[in-house]
Length: 611
Image (tube, rainbow, N blue to C red; front, side, top):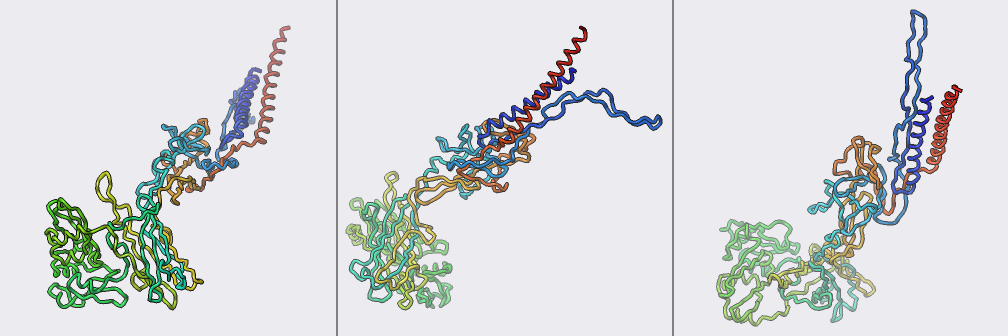
């Protein structure tokens, strides 16, 4: 009788445990990503009153089974339905994330890592992505500053809105293109004012400027004059182009053959049949080891120059150059005792293009600048040698003003039969662009006192233009960047939004049209996710039976899952199943209480035997 009473007590306890679990499930029916639990029972133990015996062939008796009396029930296991996905709840919050699959977010309190399916996140005051419930940091991978790709290393907090991520650095414009149709009947092209185009571009600091480009017809059919009328800033104030020298506009066209011959003194320049000028060695170069007829240099060339041959030709002109130093030839001259030596670095192209070189003078009384041609530095011994400027040169320096009078115009060509583009600068389909030489536009840094340039040269491609009849209207227009908008430059960008991709990559978008990868949310997977230990606050911790976390995690796509933003995973509690379990648990508890009641009645009858 006492055994039955204790069995009833064990039954009451275990059913109470099951009721506790059911109550917890129902209480968390609306908890984000809650995983329901269930209880299974197992027999407690047995008291054996007689052991089993086997059959005896000699006596002819059969075997006897063991006689055992059970002593109740115990809780066998409490299981978590951790692999059962909860339903989706739409929140439209971009930082609410639902995981599909068997992965877990990795979060940290600063000391320990925890795991959760609760993707209700927010950005805290210093820009960290964190859990809304407890402020634990969401962990992930950072961006490698060298490759700008995700570096899958030990997870760390994702500070997606740090100060450096709030803006995107500006960039100077380096490429532009002109597209559209030129109609020769357009009255704007034939007028004295011409047809105007504006090219908006940026400097390195993100300030915007506009280059004013003008087109006019010429006396030659199919040829149009392209002129840079000037550059203005965002307030329409003109920019002084003098510091850039006179070559504000350069083309890809072949150099003038006569001028090239004069510049180098030896060899003969001829055309190669495609409009390119080539330097062909003459018999006078034989003592230099150059065979007559050798091609030494090709203007607008594609192949690599023979620098040794060019060096030999330059040496005959009285210059000491080696093949190693030829690409940059240095000239040093002295103009006075105050500013005794200035070094001028000229490339081969500078000489061939007869670039303007800006010289300065300071004799202690007068300060000024003068422009000297690169070829003059090569051929004029008074400039090439380390001697003072002559009185005439000083006078030219002191008389120099800052008026820009350099080359600003070139020609644009079309095939008059087909209307197709045929070159700019020089006729030829390979001559597709002109260069706006503004990299030398400088200003004085007030901190260092040194000149600095915030511009880059801009290559403007005209190859997408055509010359067709368009009812007297020309649609030709200029825009920054190439066909893929590369090299367009940009202003300083302010962060305008953050998006999270289905693989956990986090991107910021900026109001200058750029985007940046900020990091990636890493996830963890376990060999036995049911072995995780609940820590409260929707958190789990790994145990010896769940498997270890390696500190790095995995890409969610590796495990076959993905992330969805603006959605949360709901609890997977099934209320109908819970209420059914509640009924059976109630009846089980009730039946076990009856065991105690009946056992008590039997004890009462036993006590009454003495009456």
